[in-house]
Length: 223
Image (cartoon, rainbow, N blue to C red; front, side, top):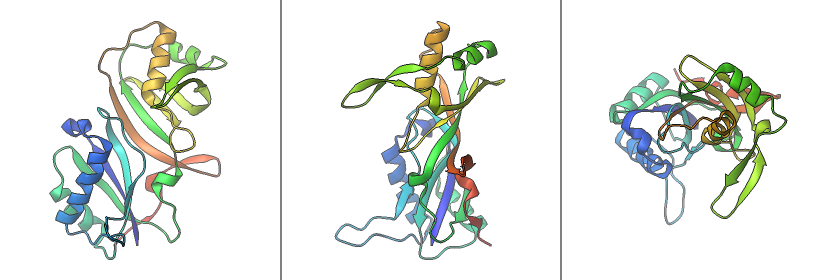
């Protein structure tokens, strides 16, 4: 059966990269005696897939991975068992059985919410920033760099009591990093961002009927 796990990443664990997080949870599953399924062949590995990498230095309350298990206890039992093996900064928040035929989170993630903790901007600045016909940035990859209009990938953006909230495209189709949005906003406002700004991923979404729904909405609690 397939299980979807939601977890938070806080504190010093924000400095741990994606691949190390994958290896970390593989070890935690073994220590928690989770009956996880393994691939076949000469080098068997746990059947796990993570929704989307989180930037090093960012915290989160909405990280996800899917895994296949041969058997499982109840949701409450499994959350407690796994959290007993977790280090400070990592906490499993939900553990749900996915319906038959459900696609894995990695393949369906389409958006994400972020909080950016800064007090540098005014609500009117963000309104005017979003009113531009296009928001062109230089997007760099390992092999090239090109100008991209990111405005279609910014679904929502507003000022909150703690800073800036944004809902942006995320996933294989279109992937917009909040750092890129903040760079464009600070350039537009002629405000220099501090060297260190805290980014928090709040949740991740998939698209259903033109609407974004939380990855945590899929599946059910195991009694």
